[in-house]
Amino acid sequence: MARAASKPDDLTAAKARRDALAAELAQAEEQVRSAEHAARDAGRPILQAALDRVKIAAMDRADARTIATAIGDHGGKAVADHLASIASA
Figure 1 (tube, rainbow, N blue to C red):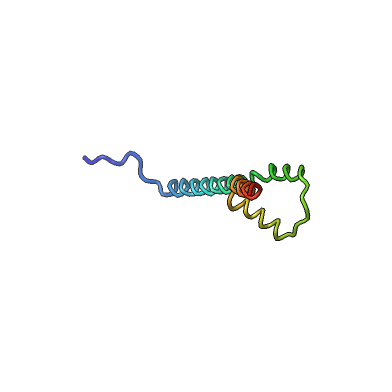
Figure 2 (figure 1 turned 45 degrees about the vertical axis):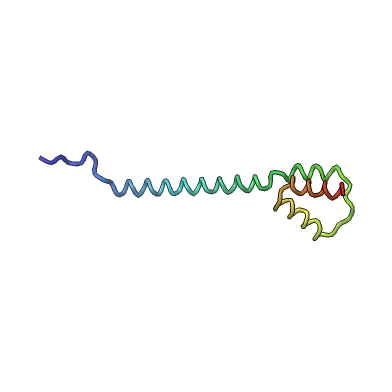
C-alpha cells in the first residue's frame, strides 16, 4: 500500500510565507539604503566643526561646491593629502 504524504503542499500558506518574506526583504533593503545614506554623510559634523574654528576668506558658490564635491567623490583624506602637498610645494 502506498503511503500518503505526511503533509500536503498548502498553496495558501506558501503564498503567505512568500509575501511575508518579500515584505521583510523590502524592509531590509530600506534599512540598507538608510545606513548607506548615513555612512555617506558621516563626516559632515566633523567638517562643520572644523570649519567653525577656522577663518575662511570669501569664496563663490562654485568654489565651495567644487570643494564639497571633491570631498564627497574622493574622501576627506585624499583631499587633505592633496591640499597638504600644495601647501608644501
